[in-house]
Image (cartoon, rainbow, N blue to C red; front, side, top):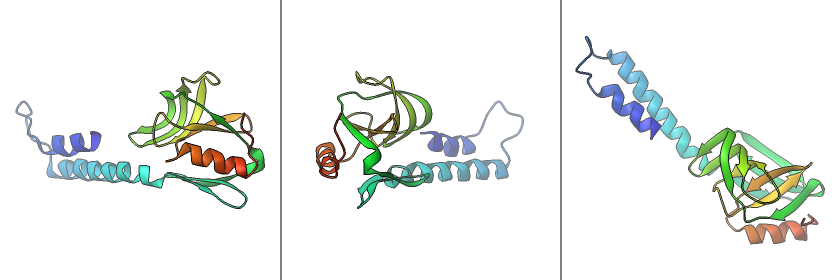
Length: 150
């Protein structure tokens, strides 16, 4: 919505203004809006979870990292993300610190595409909320690789 507002307002005349927005200003706001729209469209496509021989690989817009299986604990949850404390919260892409409604945690680190229907993967005592396409299949695959369920 914000990118569209930037683009539209760059070209809408202001009847109360002494002079219209200069052409350079309108072009700048339009390019900014198009750039933000492109960024917002790319974010959800950049989130993925992959099981490798050595660990769980998480790819997100800001980079990829891998957690060794031996460092992980799995917890099934019916809870969901609450308020964003810090990070990114766009439809289809939630990354950062969020409050959590589940019984075991008050806050989590989100690496998710939805606000509900996920599972918790703990690493070093820090809960990470993940939303794979099939949480049950990921839970079974992690258990098969020796990740304990808490």
